[in-house]
Length: 184
Image (cartoon, rainbow, N blue to C red):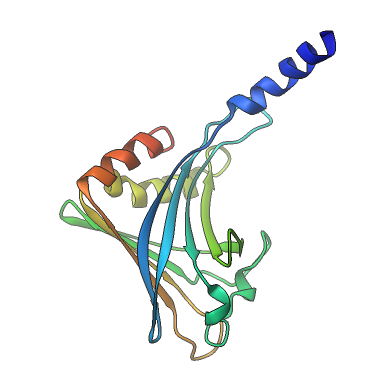
């Protein structure tokens, strides 16, 4: 019994560290191909000196293998991927547009989806956190559009252009998930 209590005491902080997420459906075009994609928004808290929270948005491209003949996913795979600043994001809503150019990395996710990840740590990465917060904030304020353009490292290859229409109800849900992570 003492061992069980000790294990519970040691794992409680890790179990309390939960990320809030919201996934919304979108559409993407790559050349002549059009398909459904998923946008996942994530906010997690700092939990002491050993656990740093994160603000992130992911783009999951389903059936990515069918795009391999025209799009080079390999350049983005892994945490140390360095394909360059080929990711353009734009949010239009509430009468204003916010743009961001960034580097991303990715991995093969659930099913046959390739997941591009754009994240900012909630400490020791203040500039990137502020930039990502500035981009995502309009999505929490009412109906808006997010466009993610993922550049291709294959010469002459088409980009992946993904779009998400955020309704007023989606914005309220995004506000609940992201507000703790959005920089003031």
